[in-house]
Length: 64
Image (cartoon, rainbow, N blue to C red; front, side):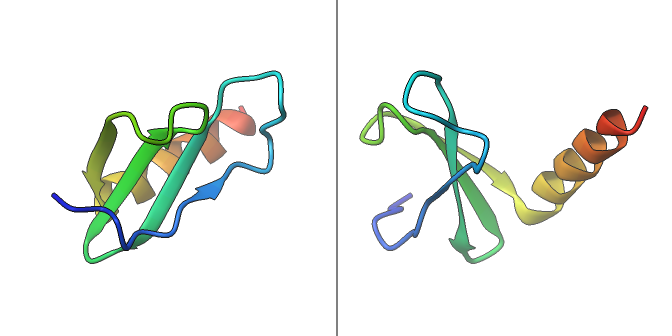
């Protein structure tokens, strides 16, 4: 899958010393995830529905 047109954004929780992820949600029906320190490395691709479920689970964990 060619992800060249994807526009990645870095987590607002990231900083220069820590590993973090970048996410591109501009692909049709797909979310691409990559390591922010190794941007030309491999990417993980999940469906938009899977990504939404993951974010919901994180939010629920935050409040428990």
